[in-house]
Length: 396
Image: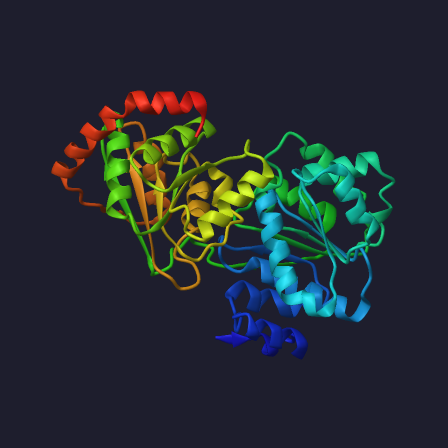
């Protein structure tokens, strides 16, 4: 285990890292920080939950201690949730040094964000859509001083309709800057971004072959599609003391499942992109405090949410792409804690599920269910159908 001071991190930052519990560097941090402190461009591939955020936050803050230039660095992330999480890391380490942070994301009024820019923060954290909006409406003067730029979760930055506009903004950023690009997977668009923004980057790969942590248990349950909600309710009852996320494919499904579990007296909320920012922030806050025990979510919650107490992930819908599975299960068994993943596999999911086992290079163990309990629960689920339909019409 390597301490940050052995990587060249200055004493002031090392003391703060120690005080907030970051005593040792993760693999991605240990390999990235020495090069970053030498002002090299970094191209990093690592799994979700590997500590990528501190791998760029620490070198940028250390550099800022010397220069204190406003609009010094830009961090571009794919979602509002990840933007707020990155901001919290920067505030945790940088607040004693007077580092000012600005957030440019949707969900915050335009006038408010204009005032944020006028305060000339040292670090800006933004989502691609809002960055494009500002570059189209302003003279872009605040982009001219950028010395450091970070593309975090880069493979997700291009999952939108404005890929060309985003690349155009990147092309117009200052040429002489240090770039950090972090991703869990490699895509064609990442190669484009690398060519536009990076100069002779150091390429760092952690766990090229996907491996799960030893504290993570992965199971499956094979069931007929029509019984899916019964099995889900059974699992939630079996793990009623656990903090859990149930992943689904669509927003409508998230709402339906949340209503079902609420009627069955579980402390549950749904979470998806159509909720307002205030609503999403409150749900995550209540989830962290365990006022909500179950979060039914689309893949919005598969990245950018760092809650170490999550013990259970349920894949109600098996993801089509294995990379989405990786990000989902990365929400549990974090920071050395234990966790479990249960995949609900129906006759329609066999092909997608087999791809996951190929990725993991092993067969998962079946989760044994008590069929008598499931039969009892199926009667309860059937009896509340009318009530569920009424709640759905009036929203949860």
